[in-house]
Image (tube, rainbow, N blue to C red):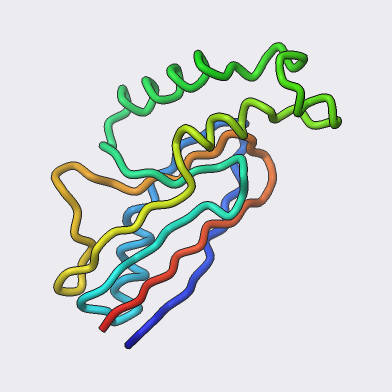
Length: 139
């Protein structure tokens, strides 16, 4: 059994950003030498997500519009969490909707995606350093 654990770090300039990390994860699968196994990618912060979907700019904007419609950042007074001195109550809700992690099968040394699938890191409370865990196991 082989395994590889790596951490990716992000510090976005905006509160909300969506970053395609597929190529980086593919490089880590290659580095691991795993031919048959699983790759876990998860956000290690409660205001960020990792998800899989299409790399189409209109769809990414649709996600952002949808999430902002469900849990708008302002007014800050809308969220009880913000009474603690935080201003990111909306980011916690957005993360819960978009999810914490993805698991992708590795087949013949490659991520085994369906058509158009890409891995994204979604940031909902940016402007500070955050971490994503990539854990690859298999043979």
